[in-house]
Length: 70
Image (cartoon, rainbow, N blue to C red):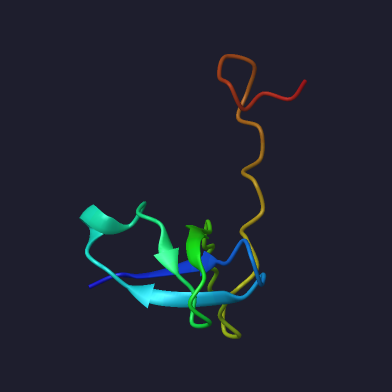
């Protein structure tokens, strides 16, 4: 079951709840009991310490393709 992040409009608390996807947009009740908490847009990011830098762009191959910079 997915986990969604919510913010209370009364006390400004941010909290998570596990809910079915069909209930993700429904308002929630914060841990302090205030009704009407709204779902936040959660962002996921991942990084790797072993990732190599991006490869250099290929050299232009001539005037007849899209990579020609000339």
